[in-house]
Length: 267
Ligand SMILES: [Zn+2]
Image (cartoon, rainbow, N blue to C red):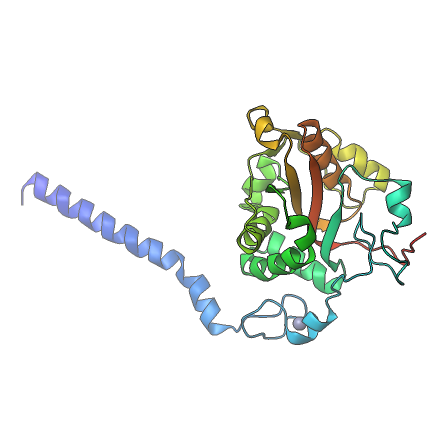
């Protein structure tokens, strides 16, 4: 065998070996999927197909009217049309309206955590569909969906942006286009967990910016910001301010779950 032939066989073998290795890399995951039925992300009981079992699904607290027309906070009784919550009057956010699919309780938290930290992207279609339903009023006439961006370092560690995954489902449901490149996080921020309301606001102040070459696309447009959870609203408020600085006509907010403090009352 001459040198050229042996080199060619060697490269062939390397190619075949590489293909096997690639195939094997997927095998453990595949084997697990076959061996174990899917578990409910909340109670870990076996579940057929969807991410949550019927019992946990029934425990999800979908937000329905009556709610504050600005903040989407559910009211315990119907105060009549156009009545705002105390929160909306006392400290109005930069965004115009907020809507959420569900209250942020145990089951909602499991869904958010599984999507965010456990690569359960299979949950995004259901979560996004519920969001599109809750936000139908905001999506009518909206010009673009803008997911809250992660800092590139966190995005690199987590590999994907959960808000972007939800936004893409809502795009398919509503026809409103996702513009993931409009807003950027110009400063890495501390995790908001464990911070007070005031600390949260300071933490994210000036953390977001509309890319200078994207300002013309935002100007005069109606934007719907997309995120997984609304806690104090500080992050979404900072994003809305950045979009309004770039002369967006209006910014609304659509999240999967929102924290509802006990006993919100209309005034
Ligand atoms: Zn369950």
